[in-house]
Image (cartoon, rainbow over all chains, first blue to last red; front, top):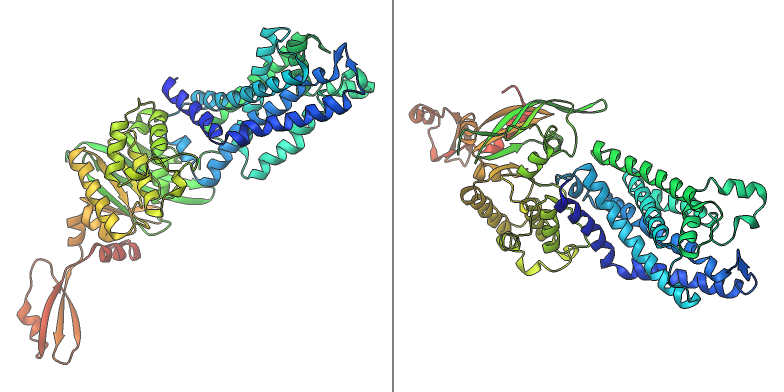
Length: 254
Length: 285
């Protein structure tokens, strides 16, 4: 592991999204503000509390996750697909970057973007709700890291696999967005029929949202250790898949 | 130029499914040499370069860079090679200077702006170093490709058709720069090109590749010697007669005796282009 090579790739991935910061940082915040206004303001007056927490506050962790993980996913996936379109994939293959350096470099770029988006949306949420300090800093930070890490690793493997922009946007539209909305962001599991409750337990996004909600608000629908274990296992599996793809040159080499 | 072999290809094969892109490529490049790899479109030149630098895996055969197999020690190999790709490609988000700094970092090397400034100056890109790369003209983008390949200061530079689309003035300044890299920086240079006069002008040795095979590899002088000179006889009737003559002896009297009304005589020296065409059309020559 050469730190210079890793840190250059990580910086390149961060520098790229910072150059278009209005698209990558401001746009998700504007979207989150719209959600707060509609769901927290208009609907929140009708749904007063969930598990003793005001509705506007209840939806904050889920909204943060929805926006930050989308951005974490887009960072490596768009970077790789742009490289394929512009013919600059050789910029990744010609330097002596190891599989570990590539995996960590892309992961760092996506996580940094996801965490910056998270921070900005939490700051906006603080204005709407007045809540600033998380309930459990350790769980809060770990869940943010795991959630953004999982979606960055997912974005990287999708970027490696994809041949067109449609592959990336299709996955985002048909998999990530439904998974996020059905991951108990805007409601409690108790509000669902029994079958839907059981199905939700197979949705990885549910554990990310529930774990982060515990870290931020101190309430959870399943024991937080299950959220941490499920998220940790998914993270490790995706990390291994990324490492394997870079090591073998799967869908990257000619 | 020393006798140390820095690049070695031995019976290299590459197959893409049923298609064989490289059948049997074998040649060596020596340290400090200016080497030209020629061949018509589809001869497998770019595939060979891709096998060398790890963009694709060879099917069989041996490749060695400074005595090391690129598949066994890719770090050593990649640090030794600077590749100027045929396609102009660059990250549109960054400026030329940023591209070069990132390139050095991706090779694990510390920042060296003085060296990068020198490259940009030599390639007439200094005044464009801080503009977005997408704003550069076609010729500038080509030169930026060369700068990228040199950013980590490799001992071996591989140029895959570097002058396509570059105007004559810039092409000449590029030739001067390549000669300077060779003499002052002791670089070994391998060039693939469609401009055969370019290879004739620059290369010490030439390999001709056709249909995935190395047909011949020799010094430029020896290759030119394989084609006889031509005596061009202009008659008083304004006819032009071409007679192939032996390179070692010229019996002018007996030739001219057949043409009583000679107005002018001149000798046409063989060109690399003619040698190339002869070998690629008739590989058994």
